[in-house]
Structures are given as C-alpha cells and as structure tokens.
Length: 165
Image (tube, rainbow, N blue to C red; front, top):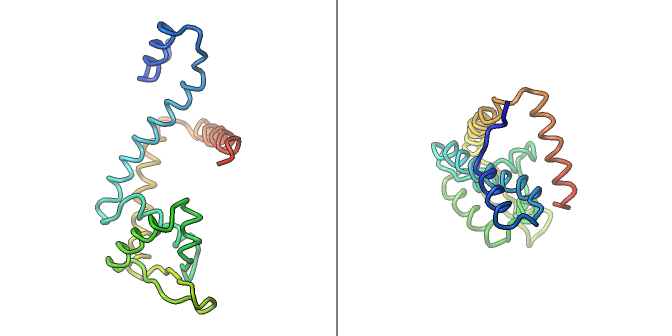
C-alpha cells in the first residue's frame, strides 16, 4: 500500500528534480511541523474566539491559571514563561485587564514591582477555554492511536530538547 502524499511530498519531489544533490530529509520534517503549527494555530484561534480572546491572550490566562491559587505572577515571570518582550506583554495585560479577566496590583514584597492576578471572571473563562482548545487538539490527534500519539509526543520532545529551545 502506497503512503498517501501531502503537499510537502510535492515540494520534496520538486527539489529532487531541480536539485537532486540536496538532502531534503530535514525539510520533510520541518515543512510538516511548520504547516501543522500554522493549521493548528488557526484552529486554536477559532476555538478561543467565542471567549473573546486570542491565542496570545489565552497563553497569559493559562499561565496564570497553571500557577495555582492565588493565580498570581509578576509581569516579568509571565514574559519569561511566554518568551515575550515586556512591551508585548503590556499590550496583552492591558486588554485582559480592560476585559476584567485579570488585575494588576502593587507587589507587597517589592515596592517597584507589580503582580498580575486572575479575576474570578478570568478563572471561569480560562477553565472553559482550555477545555475548548483541548477538544480541538484531541480531534486533530484522533486518527492516531494512543501508542502512535505517544511516540509522536516523545519524538517531538526529543527534537525540541535537541534544539535547546
């Protein structure tokens, strides 16, 4: 039985025709990773849209939620976790604060610092949104059995760790 072809296969075949000297094995992996990331990113945006948040805003709320009660981190901790500049973080925090999903307050342990805390509204929203996002991700993995999905996760972990990311 022949393996089904995807758009990356067509690209690889084109390179083989015009540059048969190239080893395109890495392109076969990363071409698919990039396409999958874009496709899933679009699906996740759609999953979060009914909650009035983007993927980036989801990431902020989810990071606070994972920090456990009292769901509080400094803007610096959030920026480091999400690999964002302070300017990028400020924009997200401004929007989420205006929506009543989080609040910023002075840090009682650092006169110059701030704390960012999920509000009750933010906690309810992120708990619903994470379920919606997981449903989309689970649906995307549905054509792989549990063992193959586990193998894929392990291989991607190994690849990610090898890049130093």
